[in-house]
Image 1 (tube, rainbow, N blue to C red):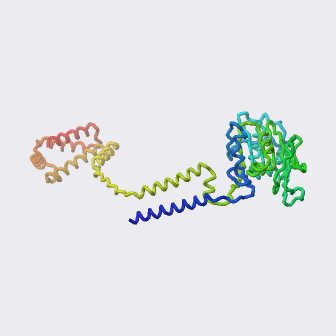
Image 2: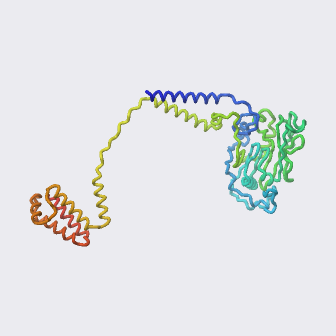
Image 3: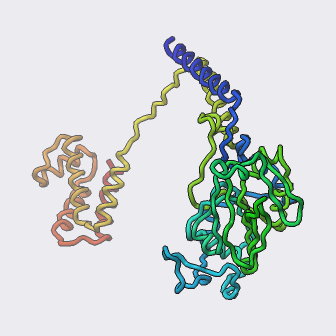
Length: 423
């Protein structure tokens, strides 16, 4: 009875837990106007819509996420002049140099790289590996307000961050205008901040400027490849793709050729995850496969509890018969004697077993083996005295030898077996 009550209480607790989870999951999320650039976020400044449109932007291609260690096997030390170091000891290189392309391996994988984040996090080693990847003829689109200092220094590029809330009234107007190449200017809802590119190599091609002629996008050749930098990732968020002109975004993506492409928000560094309202179910629902796994687990637990409500019979114990290990013991002892090849000791053991049999079964004293003992034993066993004399004489002969051969031992054993059959 107590077991059923406990199971019932457990079921009620599980149902209450599931109901609370579903209630929390069905509650509408409040709008969060803080840029997060998370691919699963449907908030105004998330990038859910852009990532959903990647198959349309690259027809016929699947655009997966770049693994954190995808670039780490490559090194770029050949490209950098170790005699020309920056103030902090970092390597300095000319971005459009092609002098060392003959060092590159031809069988390394080729693909585009698309980066979208407020800041492009990557280690110094990965910055060098990324440039090596581009030198081989690959291309990258980096949409971020900042990046690794070593990467920008190697490209010969400097960013400056501008906070529009503290800028002049003209810059902080209600609309922000961008001119992309030769296309007509496009205006957007005002941002809180943006970054501009103040310094870049002469080989770079300017792609976009704002209304004050600040460079916000450029294309930079690197060996056989190219890198495109754009400092306004906010244009790729859900709000701007739905409410504003998407001409700039389309033209930027078209800078990448239709080829195998990977996207990344960081490489081997800290990734800020979006979470406007911390909750267990919000994390579960970020990935479809994780949601399926969670609900499958809940369903399995419920089915298990329901099946446990049925009456269970006590299992019948299986009693096994005692195992006779006497033969095994005899075999082990015999194998031990055979292994040591001590035939003389085996003869002694067999005689001791024989005399023990006489004492226990026929109640005769075996301390003195003489004619009287042999005659009396022959009468009790109904055998000829000559057979017993033969056994004891052969035993005395073998036991007085320093060693007993195998043939002698077999002869004694055969004689004992003959006596056993006669009795």
